[in-house]
Amino acid sequence: MITAIGDILNQILLTFDRFTGNYALAIVLLTLLVRLVTWPLTNKQLASAKAVQELQPEIKKLQEKYKNDKEKLNAETMELWKKHKVNPAAGCLPLLIQMPILWAMFNVLREPPLEVQNFILLGIDMRLSVNDLQAAGLAFSLAALGYYFLVALSGITTFIQQKMMMTDKSQQALLIFMPIMLLYFSLQFPAGLVLYWVVNNVLSIVHHLLINRQPAKGAVTEK
Image (cartoon, rainbow, N blue to C red; front, top):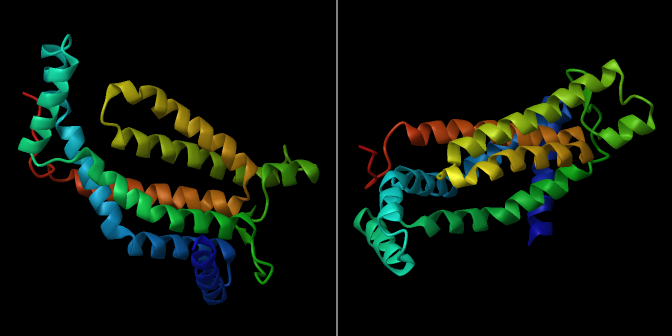
C-alpha cells in the first residue's frame, strides 16, 4: 500500500517539477497538496486535541479532589468527557489513517529522483545531507549555511507545533525531546526531506491557529 501511494506521490512530484523547473518548489507544492487532501482528517484530529486541552482545568480539579482514589478519578474523568462530548481517542484514528501517506512521502523524498534537473533553491542543494557535506569537505563552508538554517527551522517549527498541541504540563519533557530528536534526524536526511518537514510544520501551525480561533465544542475554560 505504502509503495503504491509512494509511486503516485512520486509521479505528482515529477509533474510539479516539470511545471516549476525546481525540485524544492515541487516539494512545497506536493506538501500543500497532501495537506489539502488530508485536511478533513487533520481538522478532526486538531479539534479533538483542542477539546481535550480546554478541559484540562476541570481535569486538574478532579485530579486534586480524587488524588487518593484512582478508581473514582477515572470514573469522574470519563463522566466529564461524556458530559462535554469529548473523546480523547478521537484524534488517534485520523492520525493512523494518515500514517501511510506520511511514510510514503518519507520514502519518496529520502532518495531524490534522477529525472530532476534543478535541485538548488536559495543556494541549498536538496539532495545533500550533512554526511554528504562532510564527505565533500563542505561541512563548515558557506555553502552549508543554508542547509543548517533549514535544519534549525525543522527544530524550531517542531517546538512551536508541539507547544501548541500540548494539553498537559507533564508533557514538557516531550516538548524538549521532540525538537532535539528532529534536529538529529534532519541532519541525516537530504535537504529536500527537511524542507518537506518544515513546510508541513508551518502548515500545521497555521491550521492549529485556525482551530484555536474558536473554543472547541463542549469545552470549558478555567475560572
